[in-house]
Image (cartoon, rainbow, N blue to C red):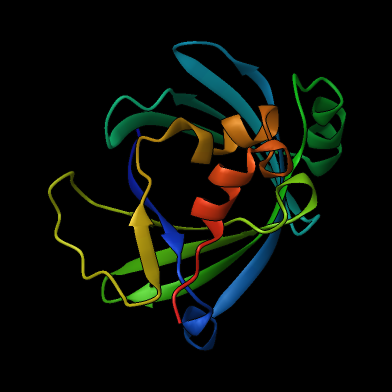
Length: 168
């Protein structure tokens, strides 16, 4: 059984870009997102696809089961989605034995940047780079399932300003 332990942060500036070693284009949609779990279909670079079941976040640790599926089947499943499609470019920035994933959102979530780091255990220490801003772990509006239902373009001006505040 697989678990995901992840922390999420806003991004302060673009200093991470020079450290990125790879990137991929991601489209994902949610087939189900009830109170206990979500079922997601994801297509990466139009070459590979996965179907995932995740427990809803109640802490840093949550159940995550992921299965590869053919891209054509993923495209068909996307038509069964409950809400919008989340589009983003994911960049990878190494951090010792860990890696930061920086999601630069597109489409209805354009303007939002989220940095995530997956941890081997809940209390694993991390060094937070200067380009990483406020932690948003546990704040539902920053999770992809929420962004599919209420995209960044529909947020209030106050919430948008908080999420896009950049420091020089």
